[in-house]
Image 1: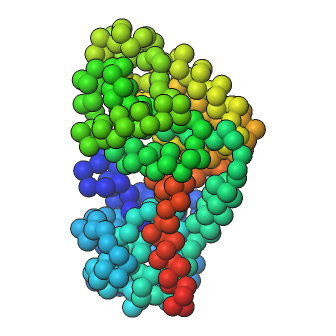
Image 2 (image 1 turned 90 degrees about the vertical axis):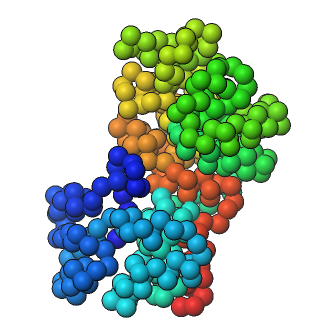
Image 3 (image 1 turned 90 degrees about the horizontal axis):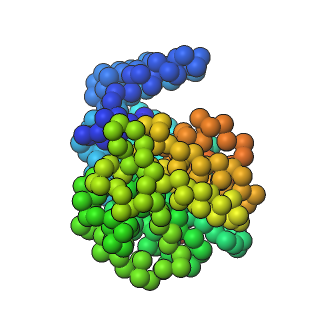
Length: 343
């Protein structure tokens, strides 16, 4: 049972092709185009030892999108229809461990429930890394989901743990606008801009020695990449940190004792705008300290660059990893702890 994407996103798709990949990897896997209806129940009753049955994307069910305490989301049909058919609930979805939704925490109220091996490894590794008192402690924050990340940045800065907060991607764009460095016209792709910009201004005032912003830009002009000063951007799409910024960030990261990175520095899907993210990842790999890369995009890029062995830990979590760093107990962990008490 898993989700893929969310309604409205390009990657909101069926799990049928995921099942095909499991088969290519040599697993005896079968897909059923149902979540908790009669078709799914019949398929569940016929599963043989050693076979994997993949249900349809749970987010095709509206009730999965609701958030609430485990006892509340356990009332959703997804949980009520399926739980009588099972003996044990194993949750190995660390990437979604900060979400309190039916498929993630609902079953913990009605079935004996345990963490999977990946969840166990993530929590052990991240606990060890966050306990360290080594400095300088550098946070690299990029990508989109700006509203969430600004709030997380605020919480992390409040812990007093962060020596350098290095910003890029749309997060960096937001802070550059808030600091008056670039035009507000660049706020167009930032979802939740109005809510986030005041917090960004407040953080710039309160943490001027910690927050580091890009010093130059890479824009798209005439179909190619142009590295330039902010005054030369001419409203062209701002798609990566500039080369001077990338070198400065890279040197700072390589000399850190602890680095946590979440989110790319630019629109890395276009090769010419991937260099900011690549330079940052190479610096993380060159760092001799504790290095953790979180989030799907950064992790995927690190794997593509064959840097996995040089990074302490590539986490499967984005929001979950960053929430963990703030000291917030993840909803999944809390639900499993409560299930363990009942067990």
